[in-house]
Image (cartoon, rainbow, N blue to C red; front, side, top):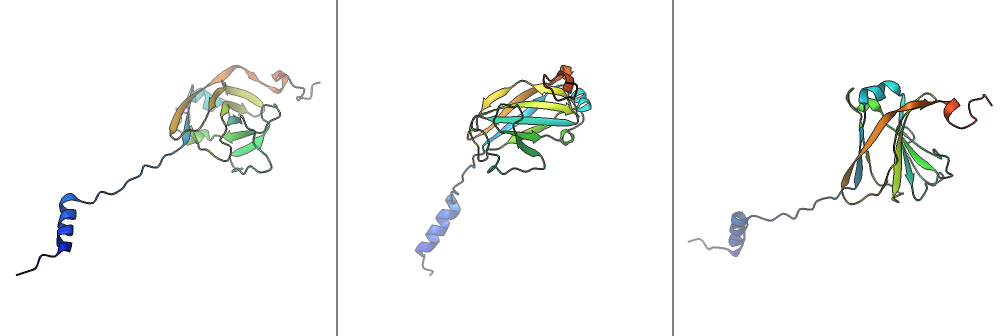
Length: 167
């Protein structure tokens, strides 16, 4: 006769009822920008597609680390504050679409606004309205950003600055 051991009853109980595995769901904080507009016309008109991020707390150009292959820190809108400029590769989407861009929180998590600017050399061809203020939360947010060709492209002669050499 075999003696029934207490450890067998524990094994049988685990087999019958299973072990409940503790699962955790990782929260992800991001803002997914979905660009909307006439993709073919925009892609044909611009050589550079920029997203300008303007935080309430400006970036510190001395201490902020960025990927300089597709990011820049400068005073894009000439308001005295350093902005984050992201270069978007339009070839990352199908020819009849505009790409999307996912923003994730970094060192500067203050609320921010953003605008899109499309350039062909020194002529601004595309722009969006100001979007925001936006702020990171504990979930992924999807934000549609409407972009359109400017009715009158902004050349150095039309940008209201004396930077075109004509006085």
